[in-house]
Amino acid sequence: MKFAIDAMGGDNAPAAIVAGTILAAKAFPDLEFVLVGDREQLSPLVGDTQHIEILHTTEKIEGTDAPVKAVRSKKQASMVLAVNEVREGRCSAAISAGNTGALMASGLFGVGRIKGIDRPALAPTLPTIHENKGFLFLDVGANAETKPENMLQYALMGSIYAEKVLHRSNPRVGLLNIGTEPGKGNDLMKRSYQLLSEAPLNFVGNIESRYLLEGPADVIVADGFSGNMVLKAIEGTAMSMISLLKETLGGSLYTKVLTGLMYGKLKSIKTRMDYSAYGGALLFGLAAPIIKVHGAAKSEAVFAAVRQAKTLVQEDVVGTIEKNLHDKDRDWLINKA
Image (cartoon, rainbow, N blue to C red; front, side):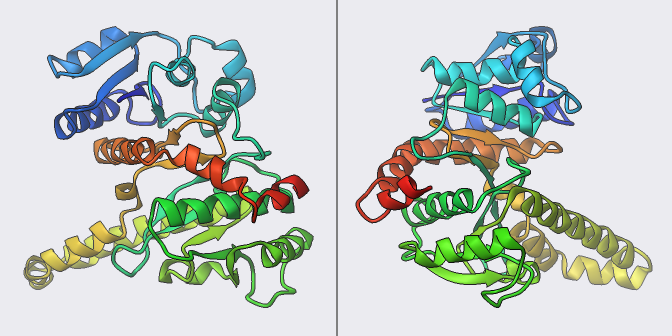
């Protein structure tokens, strides 16, 4: 099994990307890796680490680039070449911390969509306050504009993933909305609610954003615009709370002693609420595993994304989603969409 990794994408590239790949190469000796990027920068970082090869290119897609235009004009960009390794069958999955829109475009042009899916969704697994009970959240930014039929497709893909990969029996599916009542929200939310209610899903209704981390559902469906804003609000709140705790607990000698006594508990909470430990965000709906890692990803997040990719390939997640999307209970929904 071999994975292609865009070594030049992300705020901390290439150092963090290479470091995470090295961690993965040592932890999973059965895996091989293709780091795509500038050989002059990558070689000193890789050293003599086994099972890592470098695919040289000096071109990369910047975070400020227009996604589709960049993918079409920068055909030798590290991200595009990483996806191409999957398209050509040399690698089983591709991972990048680069421009989200460009990765989506690369995936669409490179490996295409699963039959029956109009628009792929960006789907991370987020932690909850309950240990080992993360939830799948989609879409969080792949599409700024969404139709009710897209929301239905997200729910179906998410439910299949939760059942087959997360091993959640009869997974609960919720709809992100401004209130719990069925009639809440704009026209998109009302029409999406109706479609999800009619679908062969364990639909538990509308979920308000303030309850997300309590784990009210195994899958939360959102339009890309709202999902992205909620995701960033969660990330920002988490970072602010950590900063506040450091400031509060690092002041006097008393609080420093107290912090030392509570270190184990505090570390446990931080670890439990660290979304990067779950890996990256899978681009659900693409015909091969393409994983988006957070732009500010450090080596640990890259390692987690590799571990996630390994599971996705071993469990044949893309094939499982495609097969189950078109069973007798769901096929009419796909045709309707």
